Length: 120
Image (tube, rainbow, N blue to C red; front, side, top):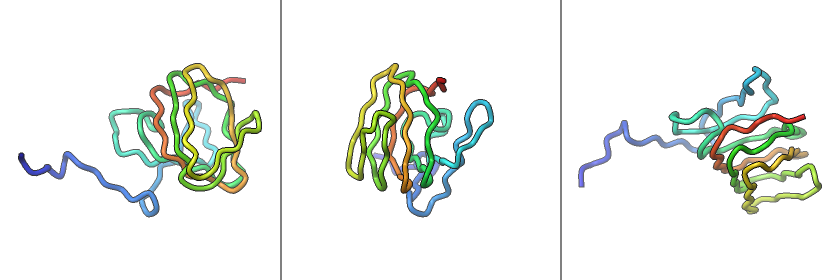
């Protein structure tokens, strides 16, 4: 087996690495941010770590593909009142529409297969 070439590996610590602001297709930002190492996907697609600041509510959106996430820290409350806490692993089916808010802020490990669509 050959040694791993440095160009074949990226390492970032989720507690000290710089997160990039999440910018919607219309240019809007809400204070959330993303740490994503694989640049072959758009920011927020594929595997990434997602941070929501205290008091943030996500835009209502539709999943175009499935989403899975693990709450690493904080609390997230879905628009139907379901509360997700540290350690909860969550799956949303393709086509699911929802929004979420976090009173205290939260940190999630996320895998999304396709960009989400904002809904009214």
